[in-house]
Amino acid sequence: MSSTPAYIFGIDIGATKVALCIASTNCEILANTSVPQGSYEQVRAGMKAEGERILKELNLTPADIAACGICAPGPLDMENGIIRKSPNMVWGDTAICHDVQQMFGFSKVYLENDANAGVLVELYFGSAKGLKDVIYLTMSTGVGGGIIANGKLLTGKTGIAGELGHVILDVNGPLCGCGQLGCLEAYCGGKNVALRLQDKLRYRPNHAMYSLPGVAGKLENLNFQAVREGAKLGIPLAVEMWDEICFRLAQGIGIYMTTFNPEMIILGTAAYRARENGLDMLPTVMSYLPRFAWKEFRDACTVCITNLKDIGAMAGAASAIYGLGDPDKKTVWN
Image (cartoon, rainbow, N blue to C red):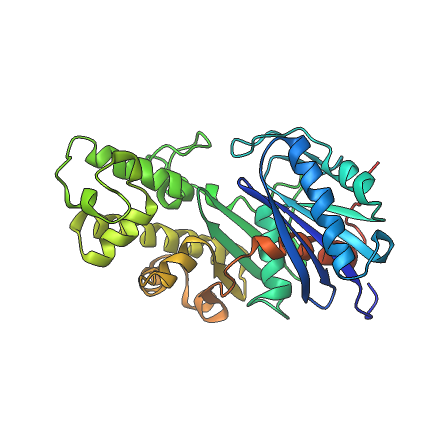
């Protein structure tokens, strides 16, 4: 990739919106916008209108764009640039790279899954600038991860490496949505935490957790955020569950340290929001970590919480920057 900054176009496809941005390869966001999720036809029309608007706003044409990066949740057909049907998406099995190239005429279009894009955002825009061995762990509805090893995105034989939420912590543990027992996601993923909390309180309508703001006495509102807020207030059940989340997260981080020997592990999403809302999970996680990783691994690695509030806004751009710098990265549009 040339050292002269170039323009790139980023698209981040999420469950509730599609974010678009124009950035430079020196990692400066120049314009951004979004369109709400809906049918594929609606989203495609919205992307075209908003994309053309921000290009015009910067006096650019598609010919000025060195590459477009698309970030999307899996499962993806990376070989053919297709988004397969995802449980959190209202559309799927779409040839997104072909359609975007036809829509705008970009010369290069790269596709990346959202977890891998997360670590790329940290590499170019966040805490991992200049580093070569980094792990990013997102904790949201589920738990995902992205791995940079010796400066390269680790994708594996079929492109699905980095499923860090599905390392097995206890073969007799709770059922995960993936069908396995005892995954890290089964302990720390937002959806699974909510289900466990609801199971514990289904027949206890007078429990203090029902009085939390945002719960309003409704079982279905007992979620990950309720555990966080209950722990802040010292409600014993919430304190116990929050402690287990931190313990299991430390267990997972220990496995990642021992396996990859990274120089940084970055916690995103739920960890960021917890700190933002007055409950920093990092001290508790770090207090458990010596049980799961040697001192040599811990001393070599900084564990931190992301400083980026909205990684999604930069995910497509980061995917484009990485694609331009990786001669082995396939560009798909035909």
